[in-house]
Amino acid sequence: MSEDRCERRIIHEDRLAAARLALSGLPPAALVCDLFKALADPGRLTIVSALAVQEMCVCDLAALLGVSESATSHQLRILRIANLVKNRRDGQVLYYRLADDHVMQLVETATEHAREAVTGGGALT
Amino acid sequence: MSEDRCERRIIHEDRLAAARLALSGLPPAALVCDLFKALADPGRLTIVSALAVQEMCVCDLAALLGVSESATSHQLRILRIANLVKNRRDGQVLYYRLADDHVMQLVETATEHAREAVTGGGALT
DNA sequence: GTAATATATGAACATATATTCATATAATGA
DNA sequence: TCATTATATGAATATATGTTCATATATTAC
Image (cartoon, rainbow over all chains, first blue to last red):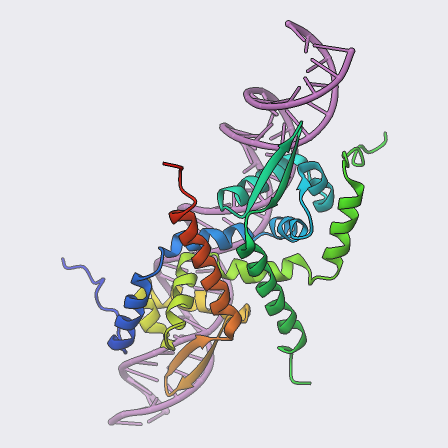
């Protein structure tokens, strides 16, 4: 009759407590995670990298990605909701730009990490 | 008979060229993107945040996340493949730790961004 | 050697996500 | 006002992803 949910092993209760304490001071993981989710697509990452250079409109970005403007607009919506990009209207055209410095910093750090993985992290030839 | 694939509008060809040039100097987006994908899950992000404090074993992490050790191990594999975590064995126990400083830097920047979105980015009451 | 513990991994299934297509909105020009 | 251009968005479908369950591997104890 009893539930068996509590039979988990806990080797280091002290570490568990320390981890819980540290996590309690942070925003919910799901919230922070949404930011990474927004960057976790090659198309959206390309958009962000391009916007690091200059602001661009939807049809430019669509051409850059080689996908439809509709698909591009959907991607931009996700980036907007995650507060990664902003836009300004000039007539019929919406120009997108990065929302703040965090975005570039994230992409730069990730790019650096990727470079090291390719360069230095390979097999010990 | 002809394909209509080339009818895309290109408003700013100069910007498109500049973006292409900038992108050509970067690692492929799909590669960098894998890093964000690895962090784009609340469970994995929680693991990384916990490992920022101290190294932990699989069953500790499973207890922390409240999921099975199998699920935790699958998540750790993804983090390992993305070069975000490393482990060392002590007897039967594998202790996981962050792979390098980039990881913490990424999570810190993202956390900061999330905090600002909640704090400052809210509606203009 | 066998048993037990800690972790890893493959397959299957359920959910999440990205693109396409059709349609809606917003701004401009006639 | 009507047509056109630029972008946004909803629904549907196809693919990707996470968890579970069963099983495999590695280490230690006996």
